[in-house]
Length: 468
Image (cartoon, rainbow, N blue to C red; front, side, top):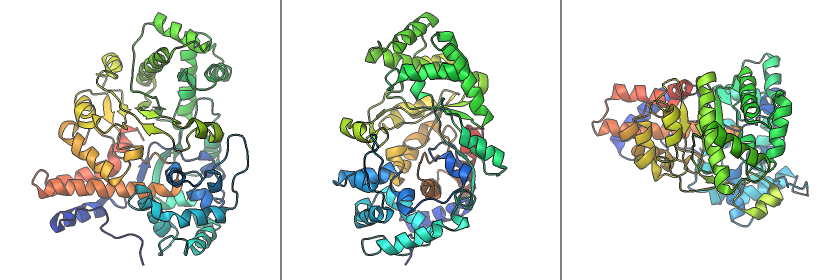
């Protein structure tokens, strides 16, 4: 019995469903452009087998373990590493059985769609995961993982990935990207510049990271000019390994355009650990404008991922460290927050600033009108908690009437879970085709136009926006 139905996510109305099906068939096999994500470049560099099904599907995926944790299942029992190196479960089969026993928790979630897609289309499973089927599923996946066709590079090619971007700290030596390049493999894996640790005064160890930044670049990062030059040096280094974008995960969308004296003064306070919360936010905001100016110089696309209260649980943060499922969406202002940056560079046609949101209430009120006016601004797709069929549909409904399709950037999967990449793109293509079918069915788009837009949303816009 198949885990997936052929017409999943298409409209229920027979006529509209038929249009959606035809549109989808025209884009289903398009290459995948994955311009922003968090897969590990080491996978592609070393090209070794994934260790076991649990380490492939459970322990690295915060979508999976946060749901289980919410039902009282400990992260230790799921093999999630502790910050202090303390004991956690290492038996992949035990972790998998626990996951399978609780698979019902994922009913109705996008995680269920992604997992079932990977189970069936990648590993050939045809029986729903449960306590009764856990061992058989584990054995089948584990057996597959030992075959050459399931090595990371082979899966990359099987998934029809044309290009994928990973995300690295400015202090990363990019050794895995160098190994990929030197190997002669033709898969296109590029990096992206994520400088949060050296632009956020509230990041633990900020001053030490800035000092290491200086040592790495040969610049005097105790001075404002040396600090900015260090960013230019590292951005250029990242470009050597294919980077086409920078990425910024700030608590708010605040931007500032401070004078040199004001910025240097805040930077000096930040190095001393003397910034107030307001001053730290102002410094982060000013650095977004500085990064935008640097993007005008070097051509890197600027991505802003704001509005997450990161590591909300202090006990989980202390025990397991960052990025363990406790990042929570917050209300985010864009109209006032982005104005300093947009006043400085928003009319520059050679600049691309891609803005994401975790605050859906801002789509039609703020983000679509801004992107529908400023040449430099584009809207990133429904992201993170809204990377779901309903979230994607709402995004199209709330932004298209003001920003159109061509002030958006297609889809990116933003994932650490490698096998979910084709599943996520498949979901996005199905939802977009369903939305386009509704426009055709109601006389707002003709079918020829819909086919062209479907291709743009599935492939061309991401390739163009991210300069891939």
